[in-house]
Image (cartoon, rainbow, N blue to C red; front, side, top):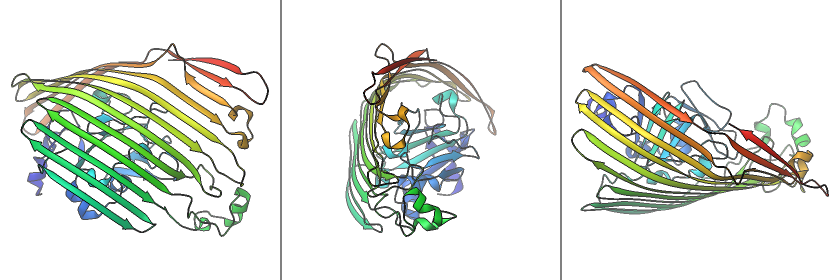
Length: 417
């Protein structure tokens, strides 16, 4: 595209309604399918690593790469940048972040990625201080298509991909499914440390490598359909990933298995030339199993994390004048269940043995919000944006149960706000 054509492209992430990139008073980046093919990106992480203004810290931990934005970075993977897939939150409610191992979207399914760099908390709430990344896989721009692909590559990488899309009258749908498997990087550990002589103290021989300890298997499916204003968005992610947990893995590698499901139903309708409404309900469920493998052959440590919840959004888009746009919304999210169960006796810390941390049965973690954003353009070369968001999370209780050896179970209740 020429610069003039690019500035006329419409994106929907900045204000939840289509607007031209040239009119957005924010730092916006658009990555198209053509860009992905031109540069030969193989994974979502590779794409995000090459977006201007984003930079990654990838220590091969369980959550995948952690992205900073415009000079800001957090030690918790992606807890200050919101990641959406087709406008559906991909949040993990255990840590309130967006780990990439639960967003294993194949690059062949991506139609475009819209990135808004900088604070977006008025529209998207807590967690959007660094910005918003919206991955679009349901843009049926090319009409009815069917694609079947298979690929093999270095590091024993294998991939199988299927996409089918149809545009028939009022009914549109896009279906993507992928299976991906790779052996992972194979590099000497001695090249990754300043003093290789310390490796045996960490349980890793000097001549050991990462080979066979960073394997990754992913299965991903999503479906999006629209009919006369009604829409449905479904996705399922299953990944089995080996990772490093601060220290080199022993034997087969430390493994995490993730299952994440998102189910979204909604309705959007333009009531008049100046008024459009949208409502949607999303249910999410996530579960992680971790098998730690460090330092010595009989090292033992397991962990299971699971959560589920739902969110409701009601939004109104008002354009009373060509120079004035108003976006208002109500937001409600309820985490119904959250638990972290772990038994890590080989770490040598009694508090890590047979412990369960959980959300009390009588409580949910509730987030309520109300927001309004106004965009006014008094002249063609000037756009003014102002907004306010009121957000509340009432107090809730977390419980913890410890059972160490033959001692009676110890139960504590924490009250958090």
